[in-house]
Image (cartoon, rainbow, N blue to C red; front, side, top):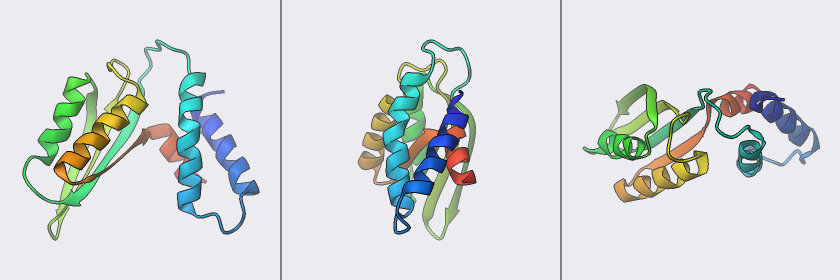
Length: 138
C-alpha cells in the first residue's frame, strides 16, 4: 500500500471513530503522529520524488524567502515550485520541494524550518504533498 492509500485509510478510520467534538486540530495532531510510521513504512533509499509542501506565513519583512531558501539549499532540498504573496503587510509563501536527494528526512527538515521560522518570526508548516491532499480530500 502506498503512502497516499495508507493516509486515506487511516484518516477515514480516525474520522469514523473520533468523537463528534474532535476538531481539525485533533485530526491534524493524529496525522502528525502517524507521519513517522509512514516514513518507516517506505522503502529506504528510494529514488522516487518525495514532494513536500512548505507553507510560511507571517508579518512581511525582508529576508524571508532567503532565510528558507538557505535552509533548503543547506540540506540539498530541491525547490520544485514556489509562490508567494503579500496581503496588507502579511506574507504568505507556499513551496513544493523534493526530498529525494536531500541530506535529511521530513522530520529533520521540519525541525530546521521551524527553527528558522522562530528566528525570522514567521509560522512554518511542512508535510508530504500526497498526505496533505489525502487529508484535505476527506
